[in-house]
Every structure is written in C-alpha cells, then in structure tokens.
Length: 496
Image (cartoon, rainbow, N blue to C red; front, side):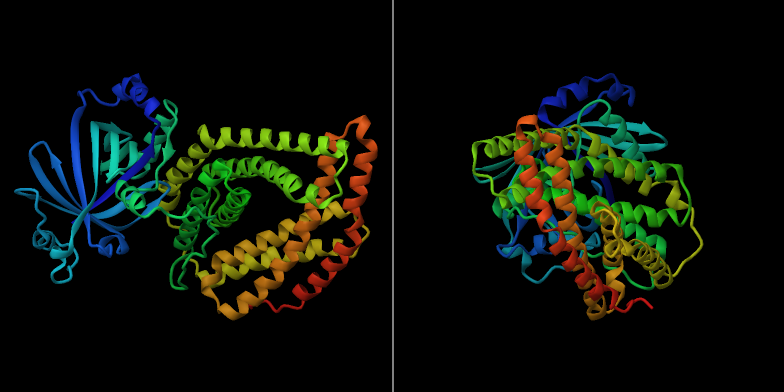
C-alpha cells in the first residue's frame, strides 16, 4: 500500500495554455513534459458499496496497458489529499480483487466482484512535469477532459501537485507561486466524487459548523490542528453558495467560519509566538471585515427595511438605492472570493499548518486543563462588558458585549465534544439567546448608520421617520436583553 499525497487545484480552461507556456513553469524543469491520454472506468455495486465506505475503484488504460487502483481512507485538508492507494497491473479490461487483497487492500465481501458494474468514466489528457522545488520532488500534472455518466458530463480542468519526496509544505509553496501566474482554486473534490455527483446530484444546502470530535487524551496541539482544518472545511463548503447568491445564509456561515478560525488562531498563539501566525491572523481579520460590510447590507435590505412602513414613492427610491449599494458590495466581495485573495489565504494557512511551527513540539498540555482557561478568559470579558446592559451607555456600545459573547460561544462549541452534552447544551442555549438579542440590537444600530450614509437633503423627513421606527423598539429590546442576561448569569460554569 502506498499513501498518495497531492494538492489538487482547479484552473479555468481559459488559463491552461497560459500556464503551460509561462516561463516560470518551464524554469522548474529542464526536461520536456510527458503527455498522456488517460481513460478510466469507475466501478461500484448498485448499492454503492465503495462510495459509502469512502473508497473508489477504477480500471485505467494508459496506452495499451491496463491497471487497477483502489483509493480510500485518508483526509482532505485545504485541498491536500492524503489517501491510501492500492494498485496493480491487470492483463486486460478485467478487475482482479484478489490481487488487490494481496497488495494489502481491505478484505472484500464474498461475491462482491459479481455485483460490480461500471458507473462512469473519465477521459482526459494529462501533461506531466517532474519538478524539484524547495528540496521536494513533485509531479505537476495538468489535466484537461471530462467525467461522463451516460449523457451527463462534468468538465475536468485541474492542476495536481503530487509529492514524490520531501515535505507537504513544498506543495503549498509551489501552489502559491503558481497563483502568481494564473488564477487557481483549491479543489477538495476528487474526479471520482464528481462522477458520483453526476449520478446522484447533491442538494445545495447551507453547511453549518461541525463540532470537532476531540478526545481528552490527545495533546492540545493536535486538538488545535483539528480545529483549524474544521474551520477551513466549513469556510470552503459555503463559498460557492456565497458567490452564487443562492441564499444569504451562505455568507453568514462564511463569516462564522472566519470568526471561529480567528478564535482558534488566537488560542494557538498561546502556545508560542510566531510572525507568520500573526500575519495570518491579520489576513483573516481583514477578510472578515470585508465580508461583514456585505452582511450588514444584506440584513438592512432583506430584514430591516421590509419591517418598516415604506409605501410612498420616496421610500421606494430609498429601497432601490439600498439594493443598488448591496449589489455593489457583493460585486466587490465576489472579486475577492474569485480573484485569488481567499485562495491565497487558504494556501497560506495550509502551508503554515505543514510548516516548522508544528514540527517544534511545545510543552505538553492536557486538553481538559487548557480548555477551561480559554472559557474563563472569554467569560471574564463577557462579565466585564455586561455592565453596559444596565448603565446609561450608548446602546451602540453593546457591540463589545456581543463580540465577547460570540467568542465565548464559539470557543465552547469547538471544545464541546469533551463535555457532558446536557450541561453544555443548557449553558450554550442561554448564551445563544443572549447573543441573538444583542445581534438584533446591533442590526438596528447598523441600520441607523446605513440610513445616515444614504440620506439626501430631500429625504431628511423620511430618514427621520425610519430612524424613529427603528429606535422605537430599543426600550423593548433592552428589557428583553436584561431578561436574557439574567438567565445566562444564573448558569453554572460547566467546566469547573
């Protein structure tokens, strides 16, 4: 059995020729690339035995020679695919499962071979460059073709960087260098998975954050690494929906993923200071700020304005202008998500996660001692800012309490698998309800700020009326906030 380590990147077909002809690619190798036509047939049972076991079985023809390959297990982190791979040559277009078992593959159920059938094929041209980069030997492949299942087709246009020797860090560093040449996107989905998606199209849904499965026995370092990968996956799963505008909730989930990532990076900084880590924290914060502006206009146009009495012509003009500004904000956001800033950040995080920071072992820390320190730190912040609930401070100052509540909530969720479900759920429910009221108050404060930005002299009466409508509910919301604060304050710290 071999372990295949490769970084997969999507490239637009329009940029394929540019990449092949670019001097940088030519500078990486002194030899001419090898071009092959690859024809693969993927097999599974009608019940999708292999797919349900996260495996893929194929026959592939290269020239006149056939080979069989079984891939499975492993992981995908920021586009880095690490999978177990068993392969062998076969004399003809026939599978030989017994030979794969001799290679060390998993034991197959009896008579499985008789239930296998071809499901889809891949046909693509592969141009292969063998390059040396920063001490690593890397096979750089450019694939162009298609996956076919009957009349259904998915286009293949990829760059694959497979590690032959050296460190995984070099794959990310090379990908970042290629990103300076052509636009690239991290590809978390294999060709086989695209084939299964043709046969069974997945329903487009907003993906919420998953709670990492942690064990009290693992080291703090390993737990924090798992959290980073969890945050990146959450982010990547919702980016396409954000760009496609199919649901505003996608953008919200991207922001949640970035917020959680910022919290994890801050926790990591407690282990050891690092300039590269500090730079990543700054990059993530900047991106989160840009996304925050778009989210504010989404809430303003889709929630705040519809709740107001806006029936006259002047009000409709205000709505139209607000929708225009919202579209402009999304265009700027799309440019960031499509044109490399996000992809560069993901690759930078991937490089850092495979770099020297993690190769130097920090002092061993027990997870069940580390987590309560984090909770207590954020709880102190919440208590510190809670005085603003009953003070005569400006209502806009409750923003700092809202952020403190978010930080406490997300840190608890990240470590939630370590604690008894009933206790942590009760505590989180009270915290979430408090945060929701603070979010409602913040949305209305932001709405007043946005109204001021789009106000014109001719609209002063309208702006004043809308502001009065928005401010009218502040007393009611503050009363609700004090009630939710009392409910939260009465919760016992589950970690003590």
